[in-house]
Image (tube, rainbow, N blue to C red; front, top):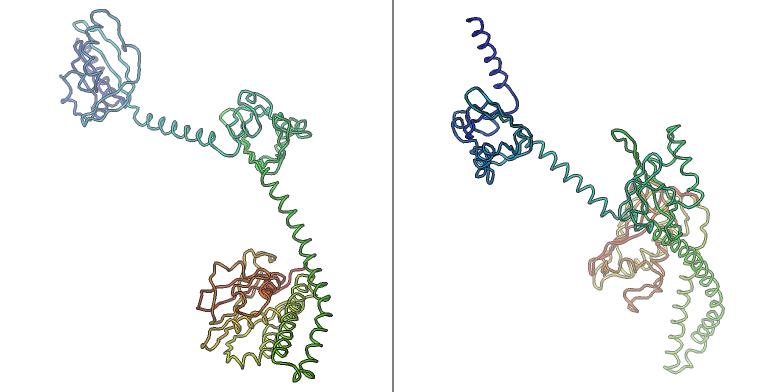
Length: 511
C-alpha cells in the first residue's frame, strides 16, 4: 500500500513539473467557471500572479463581449450538452492585467472526475505571430499596390512561358484584358521571328543554363492586340520559389523615346545642313560684298583726299558717314568670314604655346590698351594642342570685349589666368581628359546672367547700338572652344564686371 502511494506521489510530482515548465499556458476551471489551477506560463501570459486568479471566475481574463457571455455559455452547455468550443481549438482574445487585449489559440478539454467536472484550457499566445502576419499582409498589399500602380508593365511567366501575372500597365500596353493573357504563352505578345523562337530559347536555357536575355536588359519589339508593333526595353529576372522557378519581365515602352531620337537625328541632320548653308552663305556673300564695298571705299577716299575742300559742309558730312558705314560693313564682312572659317573643318592641330599667343594679341591691341589706360594682369598659361589662328582669335575677341565694355571713369582691369582641371564628362572630351581652364575677367559694365545663353548665339547684342560690333564675336569664341574639346561660359552681374571661363582640352581628340 505504501508503495502504491509513493508511486502515485511520484506521478503527481512529475505531472506538476511538466505543467509548471510548459511553454503554453494551462488553466483549469470548475463547472461554474472558477479557476482552480494556473501554471506559471499562463500567469506570465496574462500578467497576473497565480493567486490573483485562482478562485475567481475565468471571465476576468476576457474582454467584452466574451466576458458577459461566458456564464451564459457554461449554463447552456450544462443544459444542452452542446459545446461551442470544447474539443475544438480556435483563436480568441484575452485581456491582461494591464488591460491589454491580445490574441491566443485556445484548446479546451473536459475531464469528468469521480466527484466533479473540470475543464482544462491550453493557451498559446499568438501575439508575435499576428504581428508577423500583419506585417506580411501589409508587405504583400504594398507589393501588390506597387505592381498594380506601376507605370511600367510587369509580367510573370512560368518555366513553360505561360503568363501567371500581368499588371494593369502591361495589359494597357499590349491592349489585352487580364483574362485574355493569363495561362497563355508569352510569345503571343511577340512579333515574328521572336514569337516562333521563344519556346526554343526557353528549352535551351533549361538544358544549358546559358541565358539569352535573363539578367540583361535590352531593347526588343512587342506585338499589340491590334497587330501594331512597338519598341520597348525589357529586363527579365529569375526567381527560385520553394518548388519551382518563375520569370518576371519589366516592360518599359520607349515609343516616345524612339520618336524623339528620330526627330533629334533629323534635327541634327537639318542643323548640319543649315550650318553648311550658313557657312556657304557667309563665305560667298562676304566675298561678293567685297567688290562693291571696295569701290565705295575707293570713291569715298578719293573725295576725302582730293575733293574734300570743294565740298559743302553737308557734302563733307555725307562723305564721313559713307566712309564710316563702309568701315562698319567691312568689319561685319570680316566677322562673317571669321565665323565661316571657324565653322568649317579645322586645320591640323599643333603644339600651341598659349603664353606666346596671348603676348602677340596684347601687342596687337597695344594702342587700344594705352588709349584706354587698361591694366593687364596675367599669369603663365600652358601649352596645348590646337589651331593657333583660332586661339589667337579667341583671345582677341574676349580681351577686346573686356576693354570695349568698360565703365566710364573707371580704369579698365583685365585679369587673365589659368588652371588645370579634370572633367568626368564634357562634350567632345572623354572621361578623365586633362583640361585647361582659362579665365578672362574684367571690371566693366557686366550683364544679367539670365541672358547667359543668348550672348553666345550669333548676332546677339545685349546693348543694342550702344557699342559697335556685329554680335558674332562670342559665337565665334564658343565655336573655337568646342572645336578644342571644351566650352565657354561666364559669370557676371550688372555693374560688377564679367568673368569668361574657357575650358580647352590639352590634347586634341582626333576627328
